Length: 288
Image (cartoon, rainbow, N blue to C red; front, side, top):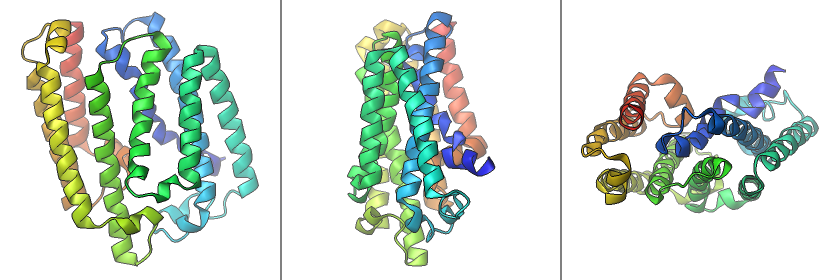
């Protein structure tokens, strides 16, 4: 039972809170009529995403056995057999897709696109450098779009741009950890890792983090946002974005510990504080 829970990675379900983003920025986060469908949507996405984790681990058994940390995963360590893994995959994917269909047919289409995109990722697309990171980033954009589709709330193009950039930044930082493992052990844990080096990764991190800051500042001063939110000093919230990015760069470049963005979120007080203050500031602006 414990091994099965580890296999489906419930700690990763925090990523699916991105479905809340559209109603939060629309000022509807307290609307129970919207909140219940979104919660069910999060459950559906969590089931489908976990099924992808299972199939990915099945595909990566041999590679994971060579990784210093991933070798302890249930499938790589032999705690769960491949056959059991496939059964768990089906038991997660089918209910998740059925729940998506119950909520909204367009949401089902998004879930199916996410599902098959990531099946393709597990089957071989992850071996293509740069494309592997773009697919991971697309997953977060799809989560956000899902939240808007379920309750029919419009999503700002600025919001989608920043979510894509932020998730790309995190994906690049995670690839840096893979490069470090390859340099230390001589083993490439991902085939795409061979096409990366620290100079490229660090340059990409610098580029994307700079674009994120500029995009966020443009978002805060854009006429459409100023008119909708009616708050002239929204740009002041950029301090949380800048300090959060700087802290994550510190974790990545100095502490060399960016293998899991979710683990960083759960364990780093500085990241938690900056994210919490950013959410609180927007809550006050939008709801009070």
